[in-house]
Every structure is written in structure tokens, then in C-alpha cells.
Image (spheres, rainbow, N blue to C red):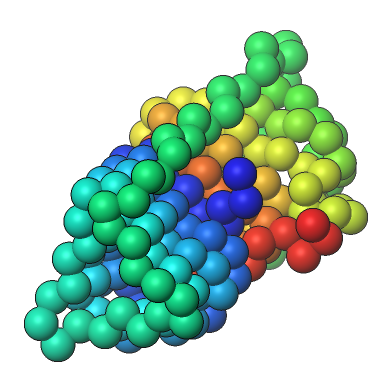
Length: 219
């Protein structure tokens, strides 16, 4: 599926910056209070789209209803379809992981290159950079600090990052993630002014003010 952001339970957008690619959920998409910028793609929800703030997507598709609160703004370049037939999307489960290679810790303002494989807790601290070679990664947990970076070499499609444990994945303020993030049982939060280049699919996804996402440029 060509989603830049997909949350199985929900996606919440809180005054986000310009974003390109479709945003979807099997259940609920919410545009929270505040002005979210242009979404160069559709909003798609299996149940409900709720708009409390403002945003400008292409189309809006909701399986049951579209709830635009008073004084909110949903400015479409296309049409609204509610109720609509919105196909369910199953987030792919990771393959059987390779032998565990231990935890990964990248200290403040440090850098590290990583080869594909199965790792424990992966922590990229403030200002640090974790560079991923092309391939498939399995992380038990992932934490990205403020001003840090996790980036794929070459195509953003070439590095697939599976986060396999339940819990929270926090991408810190002003951080950057480049690649394909897949976390079917985790809740992912992109904090203020973070940027995703590639795609993310998770149990739930929240974007804080100023965060943005761009679907794979090399598609």
C-alpha cells in the first residue's frame, strides 16, 4: 500500500507541516486542534475521520462517517466520500528474526553504521546518527533522541526497520528517519519538527506540531 503513514488503530495529526503521501487507518484518523498544512495525498479511515483543526488533503474517505467540527477546516482538492468502501490493510509481520546480536547504543553526537540483522533495544541518543546499510532490520525496541538521525543509505525503500515489541517508539524533536518503519504492535510518536522520509506503519501513529512525512521519493 502506498501510505506514508498508517496506524492500525489511529493516526493523529497535530498541526503538522507539509506532508506527501496517503495517510490511513483501519479505524480512526484525527486532525487535532491547530492548522495542519497541505497533505499531498488522501485521508483514509476504515471507520471515522474527525477534523477539529484544519488541513488540506486531496480526498477524504471514511468507512462510516466524517466529523468536521464547527470552525474546523477540511479543504479538499478532490471529494469527500463517507460512507465509503475502505479496504482493511494488514501491517506485515516481520519474518523470523536472525540470531539476536545484542543492544545498540549510539551516544550523544556520536555515529554508527549498522548491518542488517536482529538487535535488541536500539537507542539513538541526542544528536547522534545511525546509518543503515540496505537490508532488513529487526529491533526489539527503538528510541530516537532529539536532533538525532536514523537513515538508510541509497533508496529509502532499501532499509526496512521492524520494531517487534509492544510499547512506545518515540522519535525526538527535530529528529530524522529515512527508511521503511514497520511496528505493528507499537505506538509511534513523531515529536515536534521531526521528519520522516519513506513510510511508517504501526499500531498507532501521532505527529506533533511541525512534524512532517514524505513518501518514498524513489518510488
